[in-house]
Image 1 (cartoon, rainbow, N blue to C red):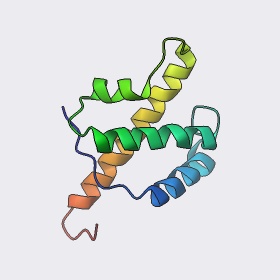
Image 2 (image 1 turned 180 degrees about the horizontal axis):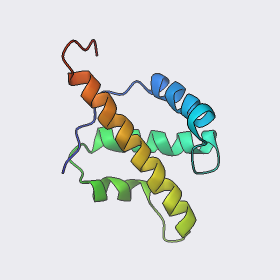
Image 3 (image 1 turned 120 degrees about the vertical axis):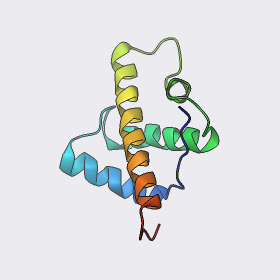
Image 4 (image 1 turned 90 degrees about the vertical axis):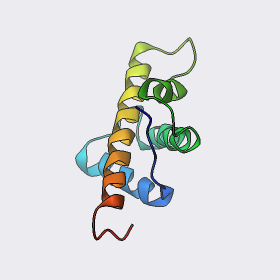
Length: 100
């Protein structure tokens, strides 16, 4: 199913993920700084290719033939976190009485 990404405020997302990393649990992928680079890639891919299927969108994050299984799993987990976050933001944006 294609995904329609809501408009994303990267500054707010940076703050959200920084808090998530410190309060909820550490982000996978080598710490917040490295995870943030991947998260930005996911946000950009979602904005540029809104009609991608889940598989196609994930393939934009997973690249290279020399990627280890562990790194691929980390990237998939980050992709899943962003997908859930974008879905929550989209729901709030269309909710009655929403200011977004």
